[in-house]
Image 1 (tube, rainbow, N blue to C red):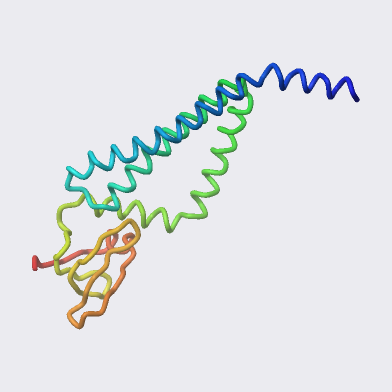
Image 2: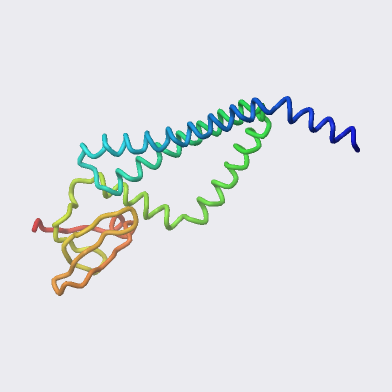
Length: 170
């Protein structure tokens, strides 16, 4: 048993430089993700996209940079078998999460669609799903309508995209 512990200690001492380099690369990846996120937000502020879309794109850029850093770290630590296992597990987990969050993902995708279409904007008076009012917000989950009696109605994006949408410019 002492021989086994000594061999583990030897492996740890030999692998310590790689571990330190991997930690530095990971910290750099996190800092780089924050920088790229703020840079992408500054670039997107010049566009006419809605704020929710700008935030979504900035988050996706940040996550991609962090994932790239994780792959680099696993390569530095010579954990390519672990990387293959992680990718296979991520595929299975992604499938399970996709099925579990089907409704939320449908609303998010519909929110992205509504962010790009030109026929619905803030200030438009629309009728959708039995409700009528002025569009005051469009985010990734719902369209917010202010009715004539000042009541707020939040309609899930999926319902807005799937139903006819007559509207008048206010």
